[in-house]
Length: 67
Length: 299
Ligand SMILES: [Zn+2]
Ligand SMILES: [Zn+2]
Image (tube, rainbow over all chains, first blue to last red):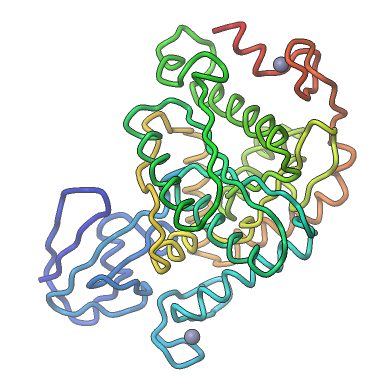
């Protein structure tokens, strides 16, 4: 299982782990892309090209914020 | 995915093909800001620079980077914050600004719509009015930023506009045929009037996403929430369009900026309007009475 959290939101989602699944694929599931979100995997900033591992925790940080 | 130095990459810049680790990314951000400042002579020796700081990521990243640069090149910094009067949003952001200023040893000044102009935005929103609350807010904020920067004895006003803000604005004004506004998004300033402080945009070539990455990787405390009144529908559509195009063609935003900059050097002077002084408040304006005085009359 992969846990997906969203900055400033209480909701937490789980998705099934798949082999060769990229962070970019996770973003797409939730309507984001490499242009609209930054991702921390297990607390560290990662590129969207990185492959997800089972039991990873992904935090999605939308780019448009503040101001 | 690895950086050229061998460490793990934290960002992949699709527009340039660079993969950068945390250290190389941070260095590259500073270098790019430095380059823009030098290229257009945005800051000169012994300038007094007011930084418009809202508490959001862009303006705080700008403040942190300028502080770093000011340690090597002599110029002064003051953080200037406008409190529009949005309860539960700006009050929180102002605390964030203050903590950052304390950490950096920068003087922080806060001026409110309520005290300076009579109404907080929360009240303006409830009034019977002709335009969107964002129109009033933008006019009042720019008015106070210019006035206070000048009164604080500063000769530059630095704002946190990023690449995404800039290309959205350029395209919006172009599509609307608003040529006088279209001529105001340039990389350097044109001297207009002695009461109009030049605005500089050192982050103009930094994609918005990279400001987020910089804030996170440098543990900068920023306010990530968005304004409860925000919602410029037209800008949101343009943003979506540009992001979609950038995914298909990862140099779209930079190409648009470069094209604009070439046009700007040809058009800027002819599009710049001569400024007069407002009959009521004495601030610089295009007409006889400035927009702020006009709006205040109406409210
Ligand atoms: Zn590196
Ligand atoms: Zn006036």
